[in-house]
Each structure stands twice: as structure tokens, then as C-alpha cells.
Length: 98
Image (cartoon, rainbow, N blue to C red):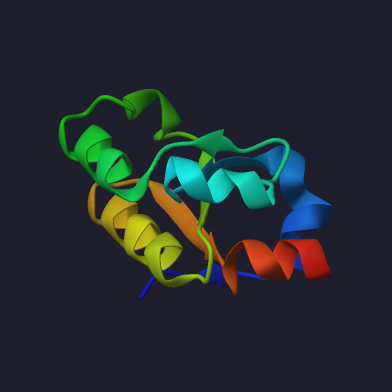
């Protein structure tokens, strides 16, 4: 299990993180964290395994999705590949409620 960060913590440290939205394109209609980059879960995992996002290795990463489940998978896979990644607890809904 990847470490989690709360929406409140992330809001206060937002500039310290590269935020990756791992939802699918059609889910973005409900909104997104302004500073986030859209990279669906499968693409995030492939990019990490194929060493296509190595420039993010020296940065703190926070992943998120619609509920927290896929965000957790993404952060887990990134950590396995040597990244410093956490996931947003509760996913995007926790962000809009904070």
C-alpha cells in the first residue's frame, strides 16, 4: 500500500508535488485538480516501467483518481520503480470537499 496524503495536506504542499490524475479521459468532465497532469493508470504504469518519466524521479509525486483505488495502484507501481509517490486519500471527491 502506498502512503496516503489528505486533501488538506496536499493543498498546503501543492507546489511541492507533481500531481498525476490517473482517471480516464471521460472522468475529467467532473473537474480536476488545476495543477495536475492527466496520465491514465495504464499509461502511468507503462511510462514508469519503460523509463519514460525518469525526469520525475527526483520529485515528489501525488496520484489521484475518482475514489482512491486506482490512485493507490499508481502510487504503488511508481514506488516499485523507484519514485517518491503518495496517493490522495479518498481521491478527487476528497479534494473538492476540502
